Length: 131
Image 1 (cartoon, rainbow, N blue to C red):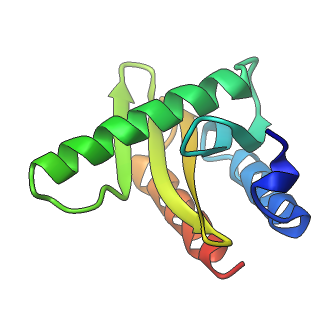
Image 2 (image 1 turned 60 degrees about the vertical axis):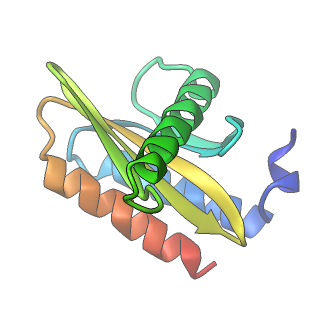
């Protein structure tokens, strides 16, 4: 699947810039991947040697499991998930871009402040809706 079939080139460029901005902010974010809900990479920015295609596939799977769990528990639609580890964390967030549902994942190291990364993910999702 080609990115141009998912969202417009302007939206892809905007999201690519925002992904790189999250890396450049110096908050410990090491990887940002935006993916379709079925696991295809839309865009990414990396400061590590991670494979964006693998991260996209895993993020979409995790997001789907989170959505099923929250719906089953009667909590409504899942908007975000946080995976905490002993060396950092990953924030997953659902977002809408040009009426397409995407999954954002930000992978951060142990020097990151969770609230700052959550805020970055939320801001990116808010700005993406306006595209």
